[in-house]
Length: 264
Image (cartoon, rainbow, N blue to C red; front, side, top):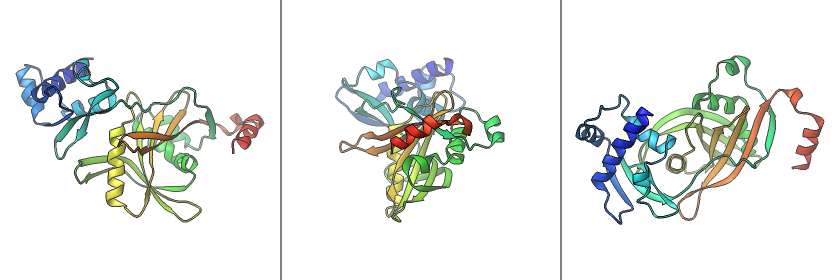
């Protein structure tokens, strides 16, 4: 709680520096964080970048900031170039697993040595998605991991990191580029990260079909998979959602197979 309270205090001070009633966006620099920390007589966090990361992916915006947004909208922090960010109002958009979604059993192909050592973080989730061919299964294409934790830059956005990048092909020969966003623990799927991933694909691979996928750890060896797309209003929307449970082969019985046959 100490870090969260410090992060909230710093970001509220930065917000107060720039916000005026009626504004729906404004930019600020990461260099302002040490300045407001000194003004507040607070110790600067060891990991300065985690202040922004936490507010973008892990915690809610402080209520003093949230209260200035119109009903149904929220403040977000977007990249705006090197070490610069943008507070911007957008429609409230929570991409979370639907508890009513049915769970599909998949034979667990994760090597036991990986399973034994895996944690609940992003790295473990990316490995599980890769070993179990969940991108192929979910999208219905043959997909291949091209690079993970790709640090690059995008015009008008700045520096970004793609958790993992796949390329793929379907039965018609159409080729795809698939940026993967993986979230474990307390981290939340980010619409802003999806926008960045799609912008990168459009800039770097304009001849390929971009399909943005996000994966979220759930309970009991379940993984929620989302295909996301840009809506007409510029907001990220869920195109499809599936939940997969990784099980031993003998946990998939005749009734399961009969049910899955009918679902075709």
